[in-house]
Figure 1 (cartoon, rainbow, N blue to C red):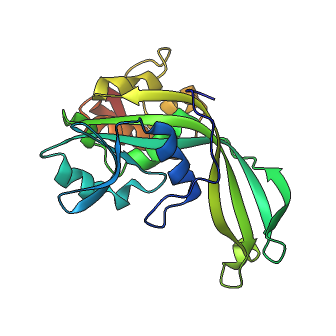
Figure 2 (cartoon, rainbow, N blue to C red):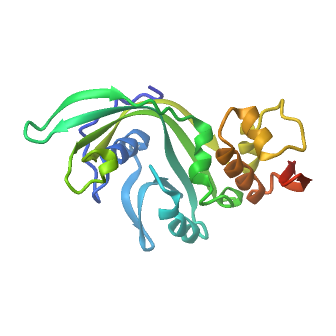
Figure 3 (cartoon, helix red, strand yellow):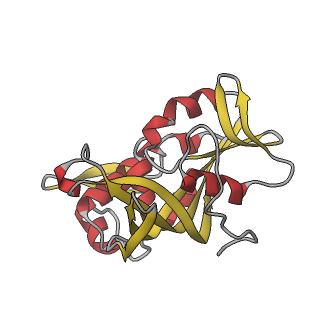
Length: 232
């Protein structure tokens, strides 16, 4: 695990947060920090002197307006976990016990941040904003729920818990995101060529090029057939 704290999976936070969110807040906090402090009209996860630290485990759209308003007057550090490994536990609600576990076949990496970054692509250009990615392992607890979609076969998510923090990576300005573009990729390039170079779906490559354009790191310089050409 990165850092010096052991993960306390039984840590209980406030404001109906998930155990994962509470665990991350506990891991990131320092002795002099203020937790769940109100700043203007918002509750902030961690306040460290003049820095506001916000943890967002999913869906950046939910926090976009909050960040936009606070960035006018405060420095903000957004922390987001990237789930490399996820164990799925099936909870027997009568026994209140996880009866079986399996490892999910889905494994994410840092580059998957663009799935969320597409909701706030210009925010990294603000001098008061920075983002930190935590590469983590988690456990997702599921239990039977009759109101859950048939696609999940009646199993709903009960909670998520942090198992381990593997790595940490910070981004402070748009230039930092160019690390995701392979040096071997010839310019100009299309989304298809970017996808092939990364060995990732074209859909993700499109989100990467969109975000980098919004950051001012990439330009459309023409077309090859129906595909846009990008260059720095």
